[in-house]
Amino acid sequence: MSNMVLAQAAEAAVDINPGLAAIGYGLGAIGPGIGVGLIFSAVINGTARQPESSGKLLGLAWQTFAIVEVLALIGIVMYFLAGA
Image: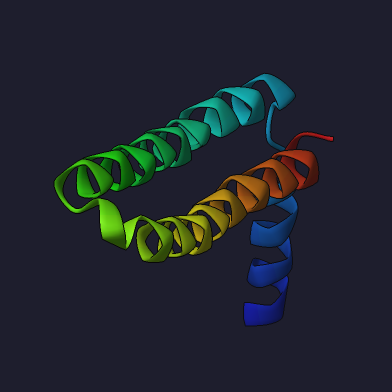
């Protein structure tokens, strides 16, 4: 009995309107966009305060930028899985 309920729940989860999926991805992309802005604004502020640490700050910024962008890529993959 529980397998039947799980199968019905999985089938119902696939029926997402593509328009809703696009809105969801658009809202999900706001977070990484803000995150990238905060990352590089912190690098600019840190470099302005201590110019000798700019290399270390920039290396760390690119690493965190990659992590934040992975979140956006996961969002677009989920959009294609749900909407298409």
